[in-house]
Image 1: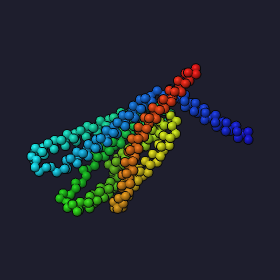
Image 2 (image 1 turned 135 degrees about the vertical axis):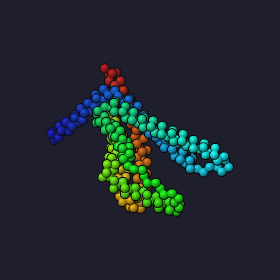
Image 3 (image 1 turned 90 degrees about the horizontal axis):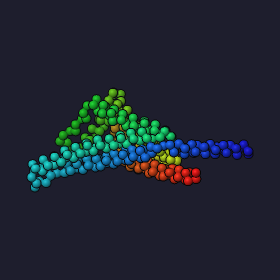
Length: 295
C-alpha cells in the first residue's frame, strides 16, 4: 500500500513539475502577438481567395448571358468584352495578392512561433511544402501538352456523353502518365500540398497545446481525422477505374461536400487559433500580475 501511494505521489509530482516548466517557458515566449498577426494575414488571404472565386463566377455568368437584341449590338458587345477583360485582370491581381498574404502570414508565424510541442517545426515543414507544391505543379504543366479540345457543334443530347468520355480519357492518361516525369511531378506536388495542409493543422494544434487548451486540441484531432478521410476518398477517386467513378455520383458529391466542409472548418480553426492566443495571453498576464502582487 505504501509503495502504491508513493508511486502515485511520484507521478503527481512529475506532472506538477512539467506544468511548472511549461509556465516558466511561456513567460519567455514574446512572439505570440506576431503569430496572431500572421494567422490574421492567412485568414484574410483565404477570404480574399473566396471573394476572387465569387468574382470569377460572376464574370463567367455575366459573360454567357445573352445580350438584349434591342440594344446596339456593336457597342454592347465591345463594352461587355472590355468589362470581362477588366474583370479577369482583377481576378488575377487579387489571386496574386491573396497568395502573397498567405505566404507572408506563414513566414511571420515561422519567425515568431515557439519551439514547444514542435510548433515551429510544423510551421517550417508547412512553409517549405507551401512553396514547393505550386512550383512543382507549374513545372509539370510546362512539361505536359495542352488538354484535348472539346468537340465542336455537339448535339446537346450528346454533350453529357461527350463530357463523360473526355473525363474518362483524361483520367486514363493521368494514370498512365504517373510513371513519366510530368506525372511524377504532379503526384509529388499533390502530396506536398497535402503535407503542407496537414502540418499547418498540426501547427494550430501545437498552439492549443502551448496554451493548455484541451478542447481545441480535441477539435484539431477530430478535424485531422475528417481531413484524412476526405484525402483517402479523393485518392480513391483518382485511382479507381474511370467508369466505376462516373457510375457512382454520390461518391463524387460526398467527397466534394467533404472538401467544402474541410475548407469551412479550416477558416474556423484559423480564427479559433487567434482567439486561443488572445485568451491564453490574457491568462498569462493575469497570472503574472497576481505573482507580482504577491511579491
